[in-house]
Length: 112
Image 1 (cartoon, one colour):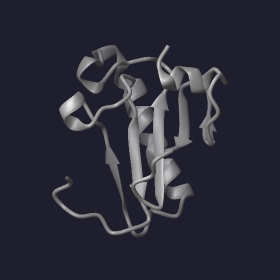
Image 2: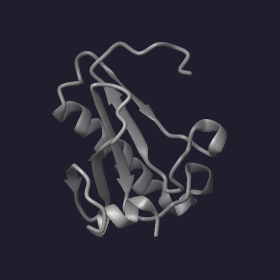
Image 3: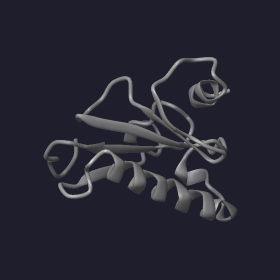
Image 4: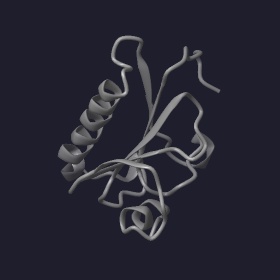
């Protein structure tokens, strides 16, 4: 089981802000912005590069959940960033697809 599956199963504590049949959202334990939320599909897809065409509805719901969480966090007006890391060179540290929702401060471009 991945770290995120263990969090979803209640084996590892986390600050959960959304928990439904499809999506788990938690505060990142090493935040890179005032708001840093991980939006995670319950289905264990290793990374976006391994998602199947049949995962399209879930992937759409993942992004819509991130949008909704951004709005709930008051980020709609000032903006926010969504990040999906794919592979070790991209910074992927947990082999379970997830979206980083970052906001609450100005973001530089390009990201590091």
